[in-house]
Amino acid sequence: MSIFCVSLTLVLSIFSGTDGYFEQVVRQCRYSSKDLQGIEFIDSYVFNKAEYIRFNSTVGKFVGYTELGVKNAEAWNSDAAVLAVERGELERYCKHNADLHYSTILDKTVEPHVRLSSVAPPSGRHPAMLMCSAYDFYPKPIRVTWLRDGREVKSDVTSTEELANGDWYYQIHSHLEYTPRSGEKISCMVEHISLTEPMVYHWDPSLPEAERNKIAIGASGLVLGAILALAGLIYYKKKSSGVL
Image (cartoon, rainbow, N blue to C red; front, side, top):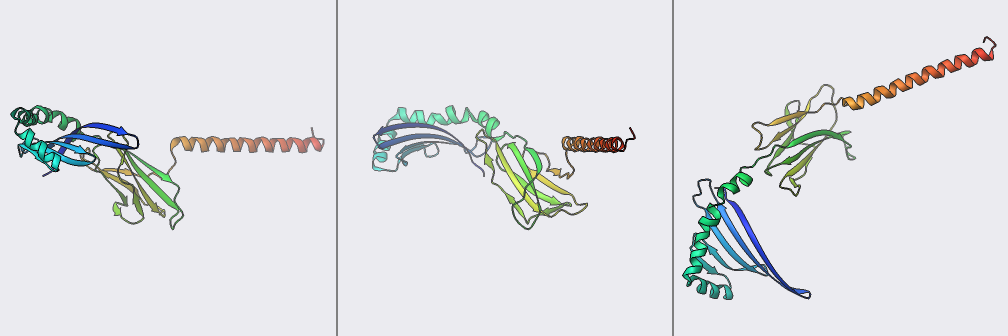
């Protein structure tokens, strides 16, 4: 059973010189299923990183973990108004926002943008290296594998962890060091919950059209330059011999 937790944190800080005191209030909603069965509200109070008292909707009362926490728990549990507010947060806060939390966070999926490119290999036993990069996907779990003529490659493969972009999205990069073989097909396969089936991206060793155009223009320039140089040489020789 998976548990999805949403937290709202209130931080209160008081500092005096280099010393300081840190108080934190953490309110959590824990969801185990979409039908909201087993939903739990937790209200925790923390001082200098130590939790000293907690309200748990399953328990239905405050429980203290330090001497001060125990005293506060006794006082708050004896106050019917305080308990009524805490017990009501399960409905007001957790259940009321459940659909929003599921639709915007838990059920949200974004397909990765995949790019396959050739990069300079590190000094090693292979002369070539490919990089398969997946960008801007959500949620975090993803699987990137390499295929060589349809068979999974497990050696000479290095991958990063899923890297957070800082905007809820992630990226990952996988590298394959290899020695090219004539006629082979190298592919990168990406599996993610946002995809209905694994996506396979084939490496095309031919140059992109823009690069081919640059080479064609450069080659044309060389040919034209050679023709002009040859014409100049012929003209010079004829002029030197008095033919012109």
